[in-house]
Length: 114
Length: 111
Image (cartoon, rainbow over all chains, first blue to last red; front, side, top):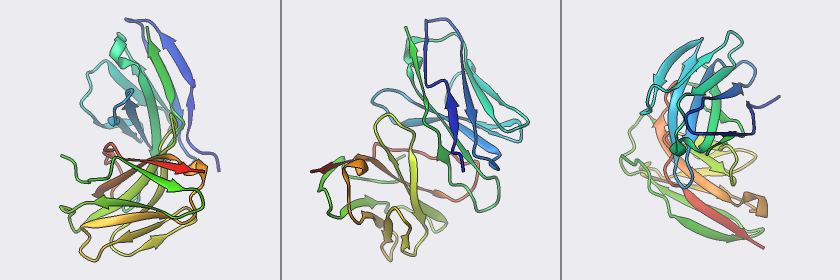
């Protein structure tokens, strides 16, 4: 069974540009989560999508946004990039059933803002 | 607020058991203990979780004390590939709730 996949592996942008990161969940998983891991810092929760809707977001500004498609894949968009947005962006997926919640993570996208 | 306390780092000899402790003295009755690990610059990997009974899978064993205030993750025969940061997380078991990762324990498996 294929795991969570993310693309691209690496992304280099300049300050002020927009970045788009993509995630495909494990087959059968309908929830997608995004996390940010800046260098030397812990994982910070960004967004949760389920059934095409944004269900929850962490303490990040609105320029971090995304969407979930009918096939449950997801995009994370970061507008007006700032240097401090340089980080590893991780996507995770889970089932959406009562009593199930283990999140399985993808390999991440390394975003570098110059 | 941190719900767990883990040592910053630990060493283990290759082939020996690695025992990683975690304190969670304020754990609630409906909160589970989860363990993930993150090998350098990769996504976190789920290892195991439990409520109050000891759990074992192909990767590790989880021993939870009777009062549930602490637990130990055991890697029975550590290999060099087990070198990673190990995260102990306490949370209720429900989809949609994000995992809160602390600094974890950096385990170095030495040859």
